[in-house]
Every structure is written in structure tokens, then in C-alpha cells.
Image (cartoon, rainbow, N blue to C red; front, side):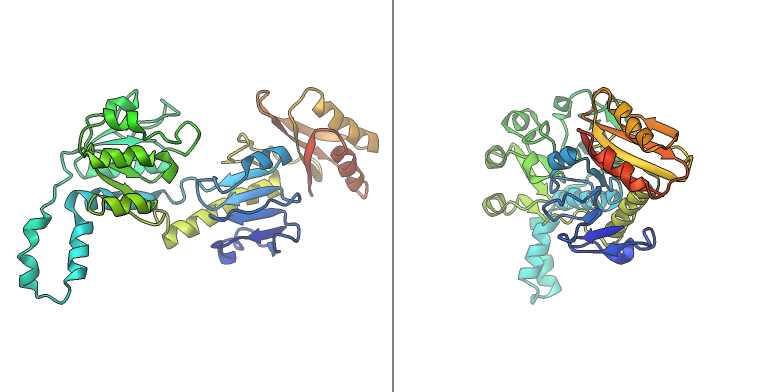
Length: 382
């Protein structure tokens, strides 16, 4: 297949999984695009986009849905890296380590004894026995829960989207307001229209005065103006974020800790994410299986019957499957197996059809199916 690798995606992480990879630039119509954080225009030729990470805010999902493009992500591949960043953020805030390091850097020419005379200015707090609220119990959230429990913290967890998740020993709460007593609150939910601006004036007024807020979601999770006001009157004790805000960092240098979106930036996480999304794409490309797609339901294909498989994405409307089968029958082929598991409430349908004794008329079948109104993509697996 023809693939475009955007900045940060390394060919050596993919070729062991996708040995037939042919690299092409974005304007040389690729079948698939592998991307990390770049934003890009999507060519019409693309069957799949593979995001080597979890968030997909750099991908035009509306265009992908309109054109039947399957979007995969690598959810969970960078979870440990982000969990370690959260560990660092909690302990840095509690022990004032950012101020300690700044002080030492500014006075590195002084003697050990001179520096130790200043240590009373950096008395911090232990986290054992403190309480933390974890918002979002996905791959990262569960690891954060385990780590905080191991450190002796009291852990409370709330998930906005599911009440049936494994909360890993944390005390489950039914609403975000039930975290109001926590010393720390760490967010690990996805950024959606429901969570955008979730940390707003109303939320901040409900929380324990002086609590420490940790953000690894996105900058847009937070209403920056409301947070600035809460920092000003000390309703928020400290803000630790993986998304730099120059205004907040300048106004509250002792109480705002930011990093330039490095939570998942480890060699291990980057390799894991690229390998994981390559495996998900390889299964899709060779069998039609869809697993961990952002915009399609999970679809695990049956063993192939016949020597040719058609994978079709179409508008999910009545009569579509009948039209597709009719186009195949019109050319004179017998269908060995047909499978469509598309839920009726989704805008796109997903059909897999196997035929036997495929010959030169396969291209004619592709043309006939592609001409059906509402068909978005047709792909042949031999």
C-alpha cells in the first residue's frame, strides 16, 4: 500500500508490521496517512488515517465521515508515559520542586552550605494521606489511580461517559461535585464538546479552597479567565498543566507549572503508539477488520470465503446492501459470504462481501459499486 508518514512517524517502527509499505508524499495519492500531531489536508484517495497517539483533534473527522475514511488511534500506547508525568506533577507541586530547581539553577555557583541555609524556604508536603479526584477512568486514569493508591493517597474517581468501568480500587463517585473535598484533582477524560471548558467558574467555586489542579487533557478543558480569577483569590492553590499558558505562567510563576505537551513524549511511548496503530491498520488492510477506530464501530471480520473480498463503506440507508449485491450479480459472480454489522443509528454502513473465481471483471465490479449513490469507498482484498 502507498503510505504518507507525517512528522515524527518513523518508517522503522512500521515496516516490521507493514512490510509492503511504499512511502509517497501527500500529493501522490496515498492509501493511508500515519500522523502524530500535524494538521493536514486529506486526499480523496485515503482509506484510513492512523493517529500515533490518542487525541484526534488535528484530524478533520467530519471530512473523514463524509468520505468513508476509517480513523484509527493508538489509545493506551502512551498511557504509562502520561501516568509518569502525572506522578511527577503531583510530587513537584506538593514538594515545590519547581521552585527548588529554579533556586539552585540561579545560585549554582554558591557552596553547598550556603544553599542548605535556604532550605526552610522550600518546605513542602507529603502526598501520603492526601486525597485525589481522578476524572476520566480510561487507560491513563486507571494507571494514575493505581499509582496514587500505591503512594498512600485516598483516591476518588469519576467517569463522565461510563459508570461500568473498572475503577481499580478507587472510590467511585456519581458526580464531579463529589470531588469537592479533594486536595488534588487530575483530569484524564477526552476533549469533547461536553468537556470543553469543563473547568469553569462554577466548577472552581465548588472545589476545596487551595486544591491542586492537574491537566493532561488539552488547554481547552480549562476556562483560562476563570482559572486566573481562582488563582488570584487562592481558590486554586496550584495549576499543573502539560499545555503552556504564557499569561497564567507569567502572572503566577510560583503556582503555575506548565510543560510543552510532553506527557507522552518518551521514546518508548512514541514507538509503542506507532507500532500499535500499524497493527490496527494492518488488520484492516488485509482482512477488513476495524478495531479501535474513532469513527467506526468495532468490526471483526469472518474468515474469508472465496478468493476475493470487497470492503465497502456506504451511507447507512435502506436498500444499500441489495444494490451492492445486485451490482455483483449483474457482472455474473456468485457471493460466497456477505456480512454487514452496521448499527442502524450510524450514518455509515460497512459491508464485506466475498466472491469466488475472481478474474479481470473485478475492476468492473468496483466501478459498478462505486457508481451507486451513497457508496463512499470500495476496496478489494485478494
